[in-house]
Image (cartoon, rainbow, N blue to C red; front, side):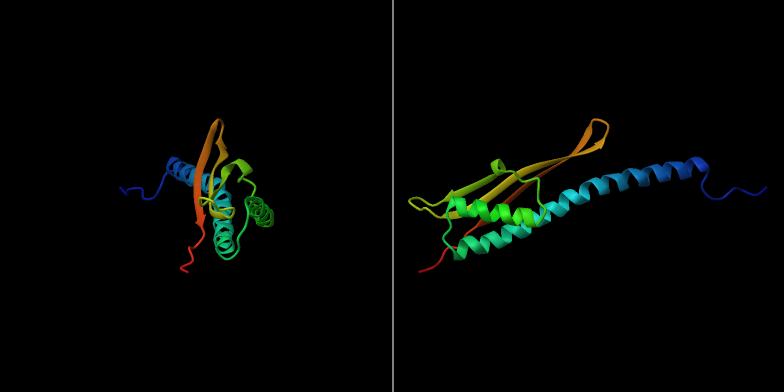
Length: 126
């Protein structure tokens, strides 16, 4: 008698279910991380901006808003942004963005991403 080789139909169904599960996770997480990398790019530009220019809180918020709109970044809200200044200083020295993204997954289960990014002005040595 010859032994049967290969996968059974049930084996194929299980393998396809596992592949479909991980493909669904990847499709839900990819946009979340694409947006995060857009925020990182904006923050790198803002780090240079606050290092070279003396910007007030309002000016920084305006620049961030424009850059987020251009980069299609919608998860970061105004309340997620913290602008810090040195003592007796009117100009922003540090930007902290701490936000959370919830992406529906299956039924009542959501995928959650917590992101924290900081940009600090380089201190001039004069």
